[in-house]
Length: 319
Image (cartoon, rainbow, N blue to C red; front, side, top):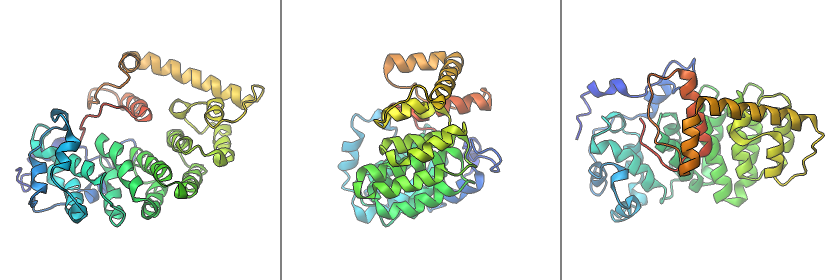
């Protein structure tokens, strides 16, 4: 087990910045999300420290199921998921995967009384947390609405955290149909904020489409009319109408303008990420994400946005 007092390994961790660039984590939020613990975990949780890479197990779900984890273990599973030493350990150390296993275990437990302790995980630069946490919180249902609303409305949070929080609201609406209207109301109200950047509106739109939110069409159209939505994420205005089963007026100037923007964005993405897109078309999934420190920030941001929008099936632990 890595000594939590040895901080020499923390230099390569994605601690983020001062909040001036919300395409990267905010250091103050990251530090608050990670907990300093004594590093000790009682059986059966201690087994999670030894399983190693998820990709090396033939059936991770079966491995977790064999441990007999139950509701009584939830507080320690959350502590493990947010453990500072475990999250910042070197990639090739087996216990570095323990936070991921802890989150995967929580997918099958009732975390409704622990939502506030899980939401800070959105602040961490981890594709595993970004992809799996929405499902965990979706299961929680009504108790998750308030904390997610608060996080989503907080413009000081980094973009990817807010986008994933929007996905969590969509999960609530899908897993709990009686809460669908409330989830849509939060997403639509957030989208109506004119301070949003186009990409955030694009991901809010994606979550609304996941809930087939025809009642949000006036808000969605208003955003398109302001050219305040990134059409590369969830489509043009015409594609949105088609996705929601609505008639498409080809004479509507907004249809033509939005379609032209979509075509321009596709051309730009193909020019910049032709190989990336070709692999997606051939394999049905994106290549495993890697941190490309040599790439320009704008290129890293665009490539990551494309990957996030497509919900790639192949996940790689990226801390």
